[in-house]
Amino acid sequence: MKFLVLGSGSMGSALAFYLARSKNVEKVTLADADFLRAEQTAHKIGSPSVVPMDLDVTMIDSVIDTMKRHDCVIGAVSYRYNSILTKAA
Image (tube, rainbow, N blue to C red; front, top):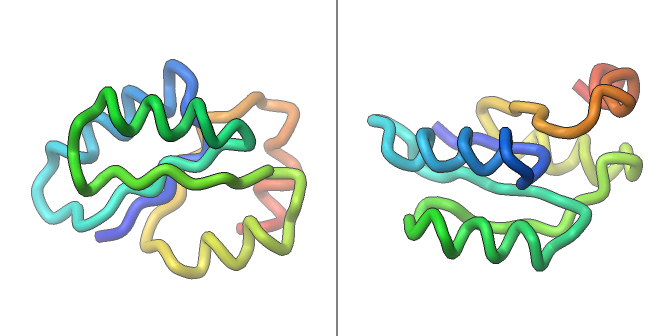
């Protein structure tokens, strides 16, 4: 399965870490508006299945396009984005 984790903070990095070590997980895209943060987090996780991505969740068209390329999407961003992410889903 291909997972998209939105947000590379504490929750997102923990999710990506455990997903990368789970069976049947082909790819974990770790997306954040701060690409450097996503990149550093992916590097710390140390799994080739974790791929950082620059993605601003307020850019709904980009979020929708990215969601379409994944089997599961997990939001680990601030609750203030729940409405826009629900619409995108």
